[in-house]
Length: 159
Ligand code: PCA
Image 1: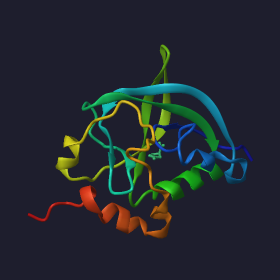
Image 2: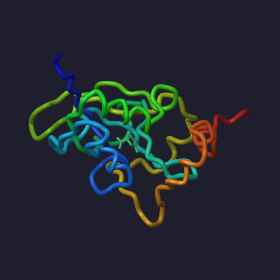
Image 3: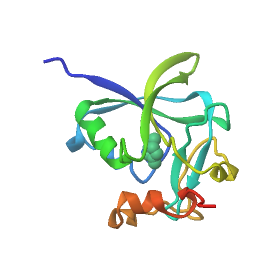
């Protein structure tokens, strides 16, 4: 049977040197770094919730051409990443054009479709890096995904 391979563009905690990069380990499936690139369209990228999670928001045209990394992965690895990102209940994913030098590649990326407008007022980033000032909080593994997405600045205002 032919092995299916997918290109995924990562812009957040899955990048090299960031807190979830270890998910690309061989036990989780096949992965191979292809290239650094950036989204051909502009997107808002923010860090939000009390866990300091990076979110790319489904609002093309706002923000920057987001910088990240392309990996080629197999179906097993895609399944693992879907698990990490809470796909499809929380993050969705879609295929976007990624610019690599002067070429374009089609890649999957994870993005958030539903969010309160006010999170667009947060600082829009061109590239994500985990920092001591705003550390990514892995303790969310102790809380449910519902808790994260129900919390703080991702909560819809009821008024
Ligand atoms: N992980 C995915 C989406 C956001 C995140 O933290 C990524 O790095 O692309």
